[in-house]
Length: 126
Image (cartoon, rainbow, N blue to C red):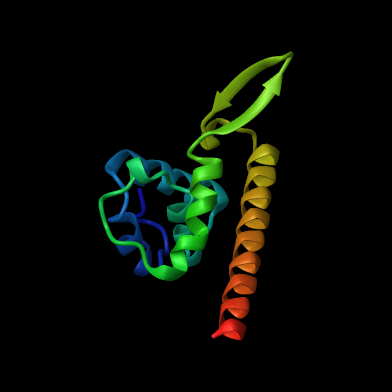
């Protein structure tokens, strides 16, 4: 799926941290967004539920991003006619994919900002 794309080599180490089905979904997301950077792969790893990851030890900096994966999971939820519908990201329209990606990015930025505040307050106390 990636052999004809220009992919950052760090992406492959991040993909190895995911289970096979999640790896395929991640590559589909990266292809849909035409973004094959390690930063994007890292964000997708952070948004991956723990059960869809290969067991590995989290770095302390990733702890703040873990909350995003818990909140978003692998499905995008939306309501149509009072019925809850779940769709995979790859099944959404291009506009919906952009909206979901923007929401994910804004949540990631909020969590990172919150983590920086917590770290600065901890340094002040110490």
